[in-house]
Length: 412
Ligand SMILES: [Mg+2]
Image 1 (tube, protein in one colour):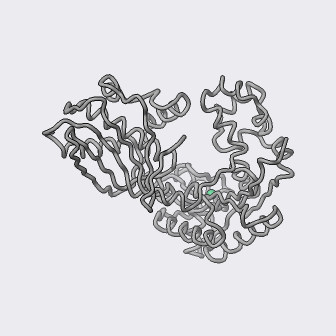
Image 2 (tube, rainbow, N blue to C red):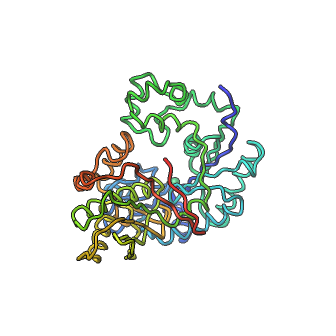
Image 3 (cartoon, helix red, strand yellow):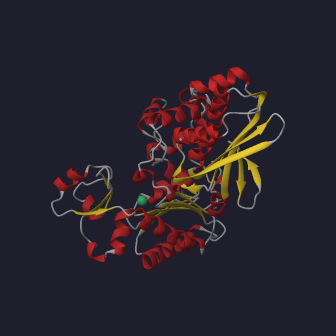
């Protein structure tokens, strides 16, 4: 197998027991004690310190169970603002090295160091430097995985946790892949693992070698995603990600109308597209607007600012409907609708599980089906009304506008 596609050096930097570590950094008397961070509402363990993990305490466990396992357990309530600001400080530190990094969650980033390290020896030195500085300046430890691929680096960061470093260099890459079970790769869950086993795919190298036709039969369109997991070396830079300030979707109707049911159906179609894009990019929005262009080409815009960042389809749809009601009763027929969200923040600032703002199981299921079989395979019944009215033949992908006002179309 050739090594040409292994030209990048990628770090996966993962904070160790992050929320617990942030609490210990601000309250040193907690150091060395079994400690869990919990939320105010559900009383489940969000993060357990390594001392607590020694008692068998895990993330997601009910608090009462954790207390049964360890009588001297220290309990701290989560402080999202503290974790967000600590993450901000970590990102500032990383920016002194390169801006080519992408936050994957509040405590993880993927970083492309190809331009600042000429080889794996340099890269390992840089990783030690980052670990040292994060510990010294922020007071928390991290584990770093290094390899030419996103998913393999993510796997590697977990190998020597906590405070670990693991390198899978370009030269060892194919050999090491023989020993890594495919199910160790983020995104390959237990059901995928079983299906893969049925065609003899056990390790990452098996997955890499497996013919796409075989995977297509098992996983539909998802096969391409699965196949790309092993060698994916794409990193969106920190600024690229921060720069996406608005996402919109707009369509001209096939014929002008003032039928509110059709317009509501049309709105739902637009909301689905925008929220899908938000979720794909791991972003949330705090401002929502709806513009209307009328039959005489005059146009009007209403917007609303939200208290909490949102990317749930149903919430955005309800907000969209509320905005649409501002336009009623309609005096003219509508020619075009544009649904737009603004002030987009990366997901790590959202802390979904703390804010209790989750997509419903229904939404998640729809999203999975549509990813596998194509957009709008499953859709709200309302959208069919609009389609019956006359769906525009060419579906235009959502448009991004960055902070400099430059717009570009989303591609899949
Ligand atoms: Mg972590």
